[in-house]
Amino acid sequence: MAPVRRLVIDVLKPHDPPLIEFTDHVAEIESVEAVTASLIELDKEVQNVKLTFEGADVDFAAIEETVENLGGAVHSIDQVSSGEHIVTDRVTFQD
Image (cartoon, rainbow, N blue to C red; front, side, top):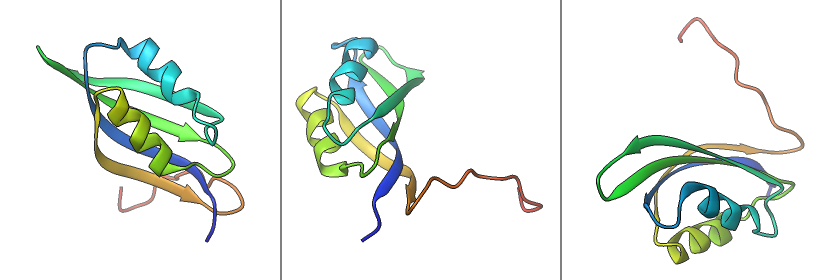
C-alpha cells in the first residue's frame, strides 16, 4: 500500500485543551512531520477544526486515537495524498 503523505481531517473538539496545546499534542505523533490547525467554527461548547498532517507515512489510527484522547472526534477525512510525493491540486474547468 502506498504511504499517506498528507491527510486533512475535520475534527470537533472541546475548548479545552486550547487549539495551540491540542495542535502540539497531535504534532508529537511519531508519523507526523508537520501539522496545521485551522479554526473553522466556534461554538459555545466546541470548536470545529481542520487539521492538515504531512509526513512520510501518516498513521491515521494514531491520529484518531490522539484526537479522541484529547476529547475530540474525527468527523470526516476530507483529503488524502498518497504515493511517492504530494500532488498539488490545480484548478480545472469543472471548478
